[in-house]
Image (cartoon, rainbow, N blue to C red; front, side, top):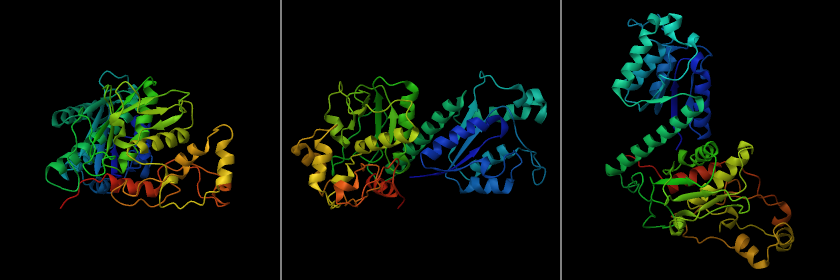
Length: 394
């Protein structure tokens, strides 16, 4: 479920920080409104800014050591655009996620009001930072990358808590979400699927920390459309345990089948992934394997597909190098379709799905059905949002 997110900050001092946040939120397919959508300066049109704050689902405020531009017209209290945006968000009861630069982090002196003499020589930004700390929970950051990770984490925490609160208020469309640290459970019906609102803990076995964080952020693209949450964990019984065995290929257990795997064993392997790979290659593998985690199967096994396989060409392709598959393996992998009651409703065949593999037209009767897919299709987004719905009012 994509959100409309408003990013508020001063311009020049937080340009790189805001860019990293913007990129990560767009990777998660959220609709992001940022200063760059107006003009590349602090002097942006106040009326439009405040209107966009009102129209947003979530306000994200980034604050460093500049108070920012103070409009003259219609601003008797001489507040900056940045503070006015925050006050507008509070006035309209928008969820506010606030991030302040760490007091100990080095900062360019020419980007600090206390050294440039602007806005009462830093008194205004100091007072605003103090007020933000006193009015609610804030998070601090030092680097653009750390900020991006904290923003994504905070956003999903808010989404999860909102979903749980709605469920507890009695909305029957979604089963009650599970608390952090508690093992996620299967649904009473369609037991291969997780309970909507579940937090699936992801434990990385031997991955570089930065690369693991990158993989997790890509996996969370699913959560932009599905009421399901992936969180990093060191718990030995984490629902998703990711190994990186280079000789093991890339695979994952499907859905709640992972719960039957002993905690000492991985439930997923990303043997083809290394940090140097292009982002599209990493994204396609991560989204595919985490699609399996959500209970999705390969699209060529969809009983609605009615794929015109040329079995002689298939045997030529998969029976030779590098696969060397026998006929039984080909039958199980390619021709076997999933049960029609696998999902609570029928899944339309979608050759553009991230769960599709590329097959040359020679094996499908000369018709090019499958292509190389690198991200979620519109069909993926629609189906997963129905499979793991958010609570709705009623």
